[in-house]
Image 1 (cartoon, one colour):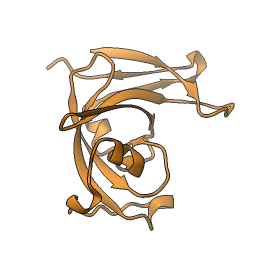
Image 2 (cartoon, rainbow, N blue to C red):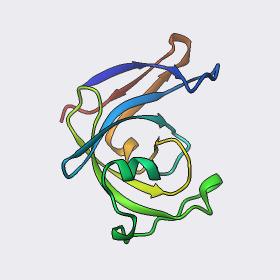
Image 3 (cartoon, rainbow, N blue to C red):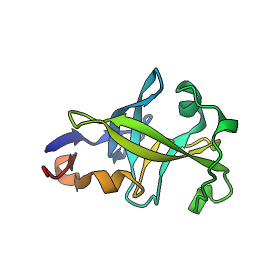
Image 4 (tube, one colour):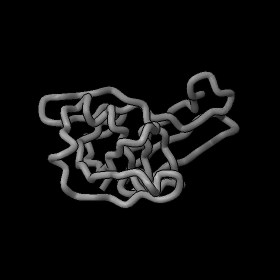
Length: 133
């Protein structure tokens, strides 16, 4: 299965990015968000506000996650959330939920484990695919 998406600008910036709309779920809550697909990010990162919007409680998340790069000093905790992306089946995604003010990021653990990603900057598109096994 394969689906194509347009590259989009972020908040008035002139650059185009692979910004992916998706739905995240927790218990009875659902939020629609736009995530930055980032092949340079080791992990998926969930902003604090998105976790609160889903009804997550910081003190109930007990598994710490170490972040690196510009987020190396940010406290983060692991959360597992179902995600619905385009016409793909719902897939479980592990996030480092952080109090840092950042965009929602999809990285190697475990977004790139679930999807193959192709960027075609000249056509201003990117695609996701999964095996049909």
